Image 1: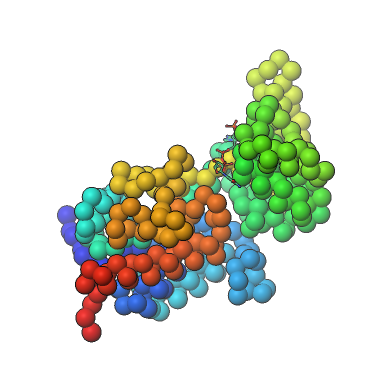
Image 2: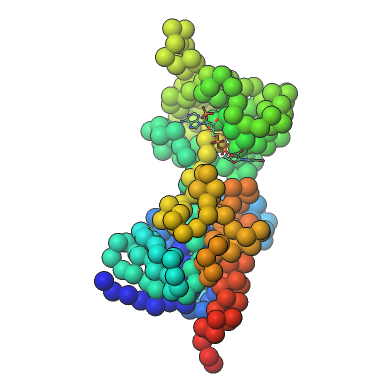
Length: 318
Ligand code: NDP
C-alpha cells in the first residue's frame, strides 16, 4: 500500500474543515484535506444561508461552500476527493486510510467529519428535500414566518426546534411517536405551555403531499392499535428533529466520545486526548451545530496544530 507523509491532514469539507485548511495553509503547514462523502458538507443540502456573518443578503449554501473551498485553495491547501475509511491513532505519526487503498502518515490530524441528521426514511423526504423538508430549524425556520409547520421528535432538540419555530410560524405541531416526551422536564413544560405549539402524541408521519412543495403530512395515530386512525394534516414545512449521528466511528477506539458518538474535547478547545489530533465542527459539537461555530472551531484546530508542530520542531524551516 502506498504511504504518503503529511504535516497536517484535515478530514471533512464542511465549514470546520475548510476554515482549518485556510488557517493551516496560511501557517505554511501544507494541509491535505479529504472532502469525504458529501463535499461541502451539510450546507450543500440547504438553499439559502442567512445567518453566516458577512452576507447581508444571504448566500446559497453550495455557493458559500464553493467560496470557502476557493479560499482554502488560494492558501495552498491540497483538496482531494476521498473518504477516510480507517484510522490508527495509537502513536504518532497517525495513520489514516483513504478509500481503503491509500495510507497517509500525518503529524497532526484535524477531524471535521461532521454529523448527519437522521431522517425517517420516507421516500417523500427526498422528493421534497429543500421544498419544505428540513432538518435544521435555525437554518430554515425564517422561511416559515406566519406559516404552519410540523416538527418530528420528542427529545430536547425537537422541543428546542419547536420553540424556535413558534417564534416565527403561526402554528407548530410537534409529532411525537410515544405517549410522552423524552425531553428534559423544563423543555417539556415550555413546549406544553406554549400557545402556538400543539403536541400530537402517538403520531407517526407516513408521507407528505403537495404539488409545489410540502402542503401537508399523512399521519397515523396510535399505529398498530385497534383505534388506529389515518388522517392528513396541512402544513407548509416538515422539520426532522430525531437526532444526529456524528461521523466518528473510525476514531472511537482512540478518542473519548459521549454516548451518542460526539468526540469529547478538552474544555472548549478542539484538543482530543491524543496529542496532535483535533476535532472541530459538528463531530464534536452536540450543542450549537452552526456553520459559524464549526468555522470557529476549525480555526482553533489549525492554530492548535501549528502550535503542536512548532513545539515538536516539525515546522518547515525557512
Ligand atoms: P434524542 O435521541 O434525545 O431524541 C430523539 C427523539 O426523536 C426521541 O423523542 C425519539 O423518540 C424520536 N425519534 C427517533 N427516531 C424516530 C422515528 N423514526 N420516528 C419518530 N420519532 C423518532 O435526540 P435529541 O437530538 O433530541 O438530543 C440528543 C442529545 O442532546 C440528548 O442527550 C439531549 O438531551 C441533548 N440536547 C440537549 C439540549 C439542551 O440541553 N439544551 C438541546 C438539544 C439536545 P422516542 O422517545 O420514542 O425514542
